[in-house]
Length: 306
Image 1: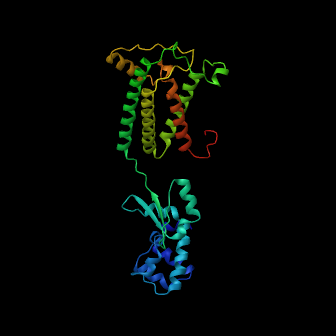
Image 2: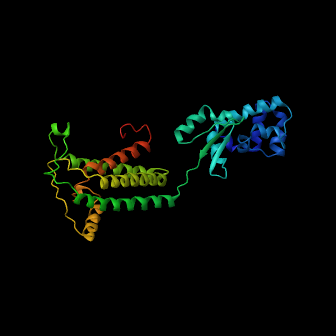
Image 3: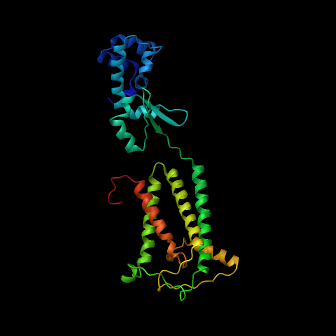
C-alpha cells in the first residue's frame, strides 16, 4: 500500500476494519478526522495519550504494528511531509530505521541517527541552495587565482640558474624518451574533464552546493600551492625547457604579466609560458580535483565515465 498518504477518512475506517479494529473507526474517522497522512504520522504515544487515549494495551501494540507496516511502505511520502522548524524532517519509530529505510537513506544522501530512547529518529536534511555562500566561495577562488598568477610571475623571476643548479635526476623520466605532445594532451584532458563537470553541475539538483564546494576546495589548494612556490625555489625539471629568469622588473610589468597568465588560465594552449612552478604542477591539481568531483557527484553505476 504505497498510496496511504492519499486516503480519506472513510478509507482509513475501512483499513481499521480490515486489520481488526472496527471499534476505533468512529473515534479515528469521525471524531478526530484522521486521514491517510495523519495515520502515517501516528506514534504509540499518540495512541496512548489524549485525545485518542486507547485503554487496551494489546490494542495499542497491535495497532501500532499495523501502522508501522504502513509507514515502512510509505516512508518517502511521510518523510517529505514531516518538516521540523530547524530545516530537517524526522520520522519516528524504530521500525522505520531498519530495512528499506536504510537503503533509502544510503542511496539518496539521507542520514539517520540512533538514540537511547524507545523511539529512534531518522533525520533527513533538506539541502538549501544558499546562493550567497556560493557567491562568497566564487569570490574567494577568483581572488586566489589572481594571487596565484602574480606569484607565478615572482617565482619565474627566481628560477635558479640552470648552469649552477641543473635539473634534478629522476629514475623514471631519465630513462624514458620525452613525448613532446604529452603536456598539450594533459591540458586537453583537463578541458574534457572540465566540460564533463560543467554538464554534471548543469544537471545536478544541488548544483549550487557542488559549486561552492568546488570553489572552496580549489581556492584552498591553490592558495597552499602559492605558499609552497614562494617558500621553495627549485630548478627547472628538464633540459628541454627554455627558462630565463628576471624578465619582469617593475611592479606594474609584473602585474600586467600576471593578468596575462590569469586570463589564459595558465595553459600553454592559450600562449602562457612560465617557469618555476613546474615542480608544483597546477595541471595536476586541476586534473585531480576534476576527477574527484566527477566521480564523487555522479551515480555509481556510471562505470565507463568513472
